[in-house]
Length: 269
Image 1 (cartoon, one colour):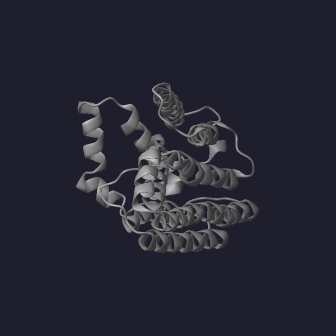
Image 2 (tube, one colour):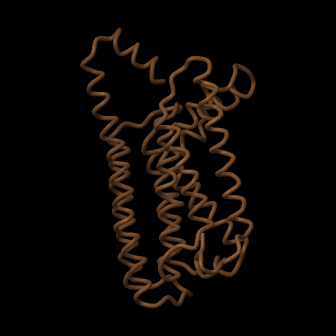
Image 3 (cartoon, rainbow, N blue to C red):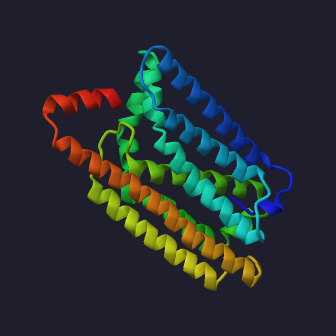
């Protein structure tokens, strides 16, 4: 993910990202339609969330974003690495795929991957957080950002990492889809808090010192760093709200008779 203003013509990474986003949204909507046609319930709000996430992702990589070069880059970072992953994960795409696929090899393979040991470690909240925030520290506190601005391959790799790490971290914190093991709210809440602190410290450091090898103006650097600081807070508050909703829902279910809980689980799984 590099500065949008540097690439007036979409590059390979941008075209691949937009194509993947459009295909994913189309596949999601078709799967949701399949469920409804056979009489299964699937909330329209999840369709809207996934479509908004895919659209935001396409917009972030194609549009000419506002502000100076670093500010525009940071707008792109917030959308690609935080806002779009949150919208996509809240739509529970894995749950939808498992319910829409007919019984057979593809469905069994997808479920085996979701329940595999490597997948379980990748969604262990501290590991997902390390891949996410650790990658950002490497991007902004080494010459990687300056390199990615001039090397298409490095640009594509950074772009893919920011999106993938954002999805993985959001998936690990929310844990809405079926997993091998669901980590409790304490693990996820503590990880979210620690990651938010590391994100805020990184934003403050960018306010004072630009990434190595770059030459942004002071005003542009300060605006971009402030955007990272406050925009990150908003995304983390949204994740905290998702955790709070799960905590409230579990407390409410714990107060229900066992038969009622079983009916609710079947209805919303």
